[in-house]
Image (cartoon, rainbow, N blue to C red; front, top):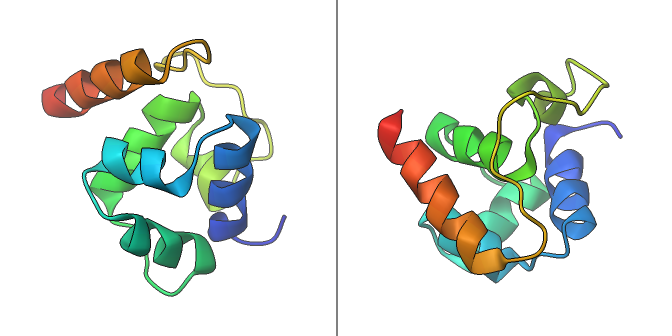
Amino acid sequence: MGSYYDRLRALREDNDLTQTQVAEILGTSQTMYARYERGANEIPIRHLMKLCYLYNVSADYILGIQLDKRRKMGCVNKSNHERKVHICRNQSDRN
């Protein structure tokens, strides 16, 4: 995987989420999120932070600095999309 936007798409697909669902979590539109995945727009740091919590990975992993996905803190709960949205929004509000 060469670029951060390739990792964004892979992480989303690995977690069975749509662009619309991720955009909702980030508080942006599906169109803007699609632009992040294509590399047409750079992702804001606040969105990068939310994605780290959502996928339970480090920013270094998303940015391609680190190859290991593991991260000790996060909010991934594959069984319930609504719970992920709630927890991620709360985590983001604290930061």
